[in-house]
Image (cartoon, rainbow, N blue to C red; front, side):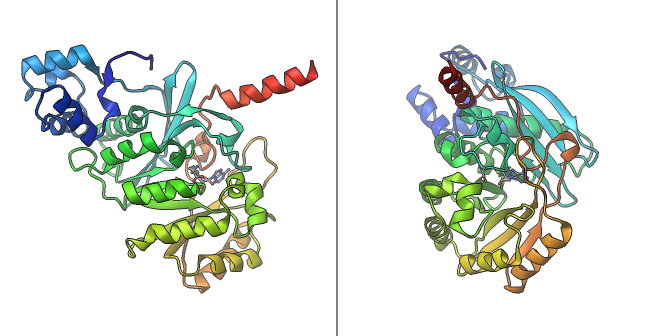
Length: 366
Ligand code: SAH
């Protein structure tokens, strides 16, 4: 997406759009009209927006634009999972995945180009970090998927849920992610209830608190280990926000709405974090938090030696948690034939961080 000086209307959530119109001397309800055209009807051609006056359409044509990221390719897995490769600027690409199930269809959206957190088992981490996605690039993924799914005749392909679980750490891109989520929730846009929009975080404590105050959607926490030593290794962010602080933030998050639950994700790594003793530790640390545990079979990635836990080990681990009365699901691996499964999203990242590392080692050798 080349940079221009025009306002990209896709960057604005309903509140910001209303302010934009007020600032330009228009009535605020224009915002609702635009949101409906663009996000409900999928129309971005100003000429088709028949309830806007000609003068206003001319003004918008001059000062604004609807700039969507560009679809490079769309792959379909044998199990129906779809994966878009989407170009966000010269050479940088992100991935978006749609997972159809009997009762729902979930879109997995990316929030950054690459990721800076360096979790040891995740393919996105190996790409390094390039930059935050704009609001337009985040909601653009939803727009693209909703249009495509709306055009396919298969009725089970219906977008009912969105998870911010693609590439990147959404809470490190808070200011662009929240407006995109507001559009996901908005009645005039995608109209998803806040239980149907889930943000997944590796555990950025201040971000969790801001989210609670500003946009309390469903929260998923990538836990992966119940002890600090082990979690420090798997999720280096734990060295900044250790478990005690992370779990306290989780308690605060559900404190305001006791009917909510937090989903704790736990990737099952053979011989690393999958013992029954650790399952007991997990039960212990989750005590008092309305929690659901989601066990994720590890998907092998290049550049990490981990292996997936055997099925029997996952069952034993699961049994220990279920015994304690905690709802525990095991995530089905979907779309792995097209590298669309958890942790496999790599897109195409011209990573500044990776380049810097390379530069540093080249200079050191010189
Ligand atoms: N940064 C956020 C959003 C990314 S979500 C977060 O960490 O939650 C991606 C999910 O897939 C996380 O739960 C992550 O831990 C998991 N994941 C990463 N790599 C994986 C792999 N190789 N196999 C299975 N799950 C993985």
